[in-house]
Length: 327
Image 1: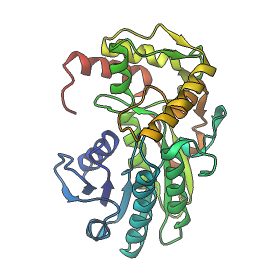
Image 2 (image 1 turned 90 degrees about the vertical axis):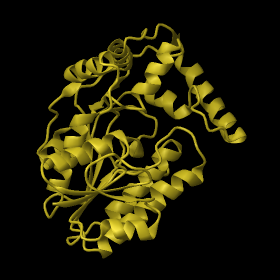
Image 3 (image 1 turned 120 degrees about the vertical axis):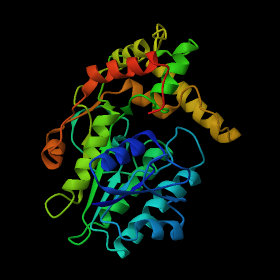
């Protein structure tokens, strides 16, 4: 299959593109900087109509991961990449005769701050999603699914809290804060959360490319390891793998939420670009249960995790012990 992967310079995109290449697919990647993969490459933004048109030409499938992923930033930056970029790519792919489109989304598009316990893939809701990232990813998912048709099947896949060796979002930031003694547990740390090891998430995206078609289209699917654990346990296991001290200090939930709101206002007013110590979104995510029913996902994709949490922690520990070699 000829597959275009956007956002292959990120951990999940690079891992997924590598998996497609190893099984023999003809892969093209589109991103703003080189991904270091042995495949065709188009350098450019998903908002660049010319670059997108070149990238989608002749493709059978598009796997769209490119996005602005962060906890801070101006709203227009998220809107530009996540919403306008998705609209540009969907339109170009449909015009080019691409036969399947997989939109990589996030469970945060349907998280309004309340607990999600064994939830399914509830509808994306930009009006209730929390933070610029979640709101714009929700809008992007609606754009992609809104283009679904018999001749242009679309699936939206929402990997949940992807982590693994080389992760710069969750693992690296958590480890850096723990090493500096600045990683508290918010509340009791008992909220249950799902996570997804990166190799499992990549395999699910490849399965989505294969499944997307007449019998599997027009819906969102949440992907996770299906093994919810307390937040404090996940923190402790990640810190142990990286050989840094686990968190010992607890911050009350009301204080964490208030601090997150205050930091949001400060960062917006001062237009700071550095990573803040806490945000309202992060405080809600780390104090609210969110784990998902995987039955529909596994039925549609004919996929299940092959690595899981325990093997994932062991692989992460081995990676740190080896000096964090490039993946």
